[in-house]
Image (cartoon, rainbow over all chains, first blue to last red; front, side):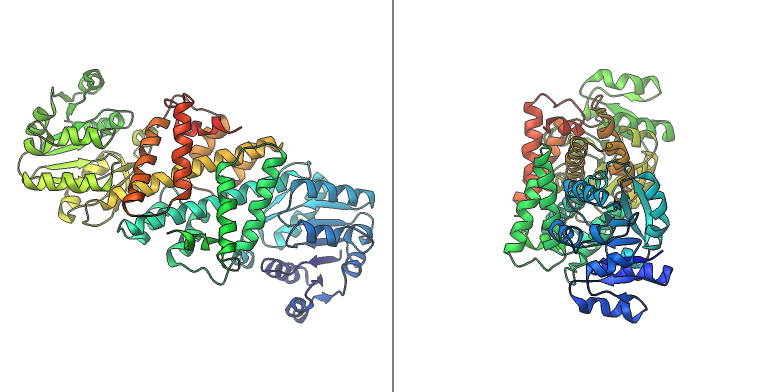
Length: 288
Length: 288
């Protein structure tokens, strides 16, 4: 079984490295070619186009930045769908609109191959330590087939959302909204605590050892308390992209999201304030 | 050592019961006398006034609903401060403005007795199972003295914020803001998930077993998914009181809180929509 990987960004690289290490082979393609070099040095096979990669593989992972990039690598004569062999599987890890997943799954169907939605939760360090969570939806048999591969990719948790292909992407948007909201709320609370003269580290220690003892609060709380906004694990610019998807989906289904809309406003302000390349926790820097 | 308890609300009752059970004695006073009856039936001693109770006790717990009620039971000729014996300790568990704690501590000082800030985190069921968290600030020696009593009251965690008497109340306001924000955000995400056609219980199960595996998300997530908004563990009306304190404190120290202000608006809308006596998770009912 030949495996390919398209999209070597911050999170794509450690995931691709995990697969390469476990499977001892991997075809790689990236728009910016230089990003393939470290993987090729470790034994991956360089491909000069999506078409070349897809035609060589049984399974293709994609981890590109947004819906447009995903459409670009998937559709058309040079895309994954038309070039992947019959029965091949495209595992898409990007955070995208649920409707995009549905459309692409249909295109794969028309080409007698398959699409699986597998958006991933976790920052690069979680990928490196094998602590990612994959949210998956699509055909059950296919999912059972790719599960060991998702584990090899660094997945500690694989969460199934059924055969509606868009379901995992809905779940992922809901997760990211909760994370964004938790980051902003922690930032506001820390600012209030600091200006009120209490020791913020003691406070954070208390909440993360009691009622908020969860990875999101522990990890982002640590970043916020120490104000480590660069290098970014996940940029504010990508954060805005996800918040925009959340709001687009909420409009699509007429779901009211007052905090969601506020977060879209805050992230847009962050970009306007030059924080686009900072970690998304840098929304804290805008609080007076 | 004689112990007294003032304020038998939803949370006051199980805390008072814990103390009575462990210490086999407790003087009780409540504005609405009938609420003392179950405790008296279990062996507590009824007091007909704050003055009577304070004059009989070495340590007085108070768990009243707001700053005004606390000022009322603490200040003046009939209040705790003037009637508690020299060296006596008033342990205040209410969520109040930090400035109120500072003022009352000074009044106790003038009366040669003491005030300890010990706002409590946890709902009635946490009190009944001894899983409360106390946030404490004030004189270190006094805190060491009352710690065993806070444990007997149901405290699994006792978190110290130093000798600035107002510090624990600042921390408590920050906690409650985070909780309110988490509830609203979960409600918005659940609404989005449901309207997008995914199974919300599966989604909640996933987040509370992975990146949001914390008591706040597990407990409130369960209430939101099952839509159990009555009986209220903590009413939306009391929630608004706390949100108002958060915003008042943020104005006091000039700390910007965009989500905080949005939550104040949401809770006011909740009251206007007749949800005041529902659990504060009922903000979910306002999401279209």
